[in-house]
Length: 254
Image (tube, rainbow, N blue to C red; front, side):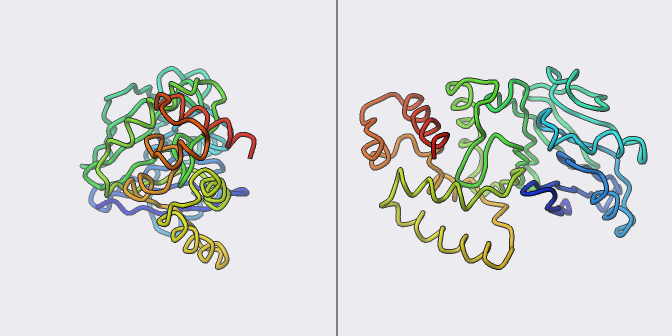
């Protein structure tokens, strides 16, 4: 299995280091800054071979150039983002494969937060690195895409195996959960999960990773088919994408 390290940086970002102990290859997912990555590489005796970027925002690519300069790693990102990714080397599109030693990730195109957003699903390692498309009990804001684009992107992720571990790029969970309770206040699983999350954060512990199964039960952006949610936001009988769009609008105003 891949060794996965979670590095908290900036105010609420996560950088992920993926290490294959057999080949010695290491990837950094969305390195916002370089120094924490360099520090771990030195401590572990690892060599950085790859950067996997999900999208072009500066808090996901800010460390690219320094890491590339100091390690010679290859920078991979969505092909349509090639002019917006510092140090860009290789473009990928939906369905492409990215390898780290013998570990393979399938690239899934997920426009919505940005137009060129992609995520990386390592099926054999049960891990999804989803940037700002999917958060624990949330999803990304629609900066460049439409509600329909984001809804379709999330449908792809909902279809992944329930046990898939979700490694998102931000620690937004408490705020997301508080909003989720306003649109589905009777969801007992959500209530119970928030108790756990509040305890984790009180102890300065991460709430990431989550799983697809947990998100299906508690994430309002995965629950447009919930009658209780539809009733709470007065969208009973509306199309799923319309319910989703209304939940996104309400979250933007929360």
